[in-house]
Length: 106
Length: 120
Image 1 (cartoon, rainbow over the protein chains, first blue to last red):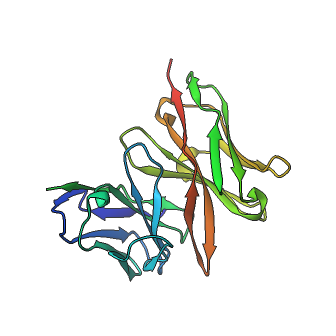
Image 2: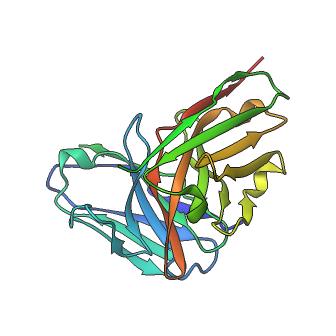
């Protein structure tokens, strides 16, 4: 199985700030990497697909990058609605999620 | 409006079986890749299984053959048969449509989930 490791597991930031979440794959997954946002009691929401492509309707303050084994999700100009848990997920071989990163308000 | 609605969850004893359903509207299950993802309460997401439009199926290795994904084209419904359930299978089970791009795919439409509780 391909293992996905996110860092940090949690972080706090201020409204208007910028954060970057990292996701590392245990082997090369090209750009077969997606990012999701999940709020308490809700289903996940697709933000970024294929490492860097913004899903329709997702604000442009979200951006993704990387290829191979190392990937990033960056949120610039944090808004109150962005405080949630974020997951990366690979689709290269079967499917695997990272353990999640909880983003809290500072 | 595209919608996925899961049903079939509940309280089940260890060793028991359960069948989850995911009724789709606004999309055709048989024409799409469809998947199941679960989440233990307070924990992260865990991919469970996928069925391709051509009928091929794949499972997370950790399930050890206890779960079976299927679909009923006439009912436009996705299923997940859960057998020999364990306490650690307790989770919210989500169904999701898998959108396919060039060389990759992602879960773009999700249901609200159904809770399975395995306990004696």
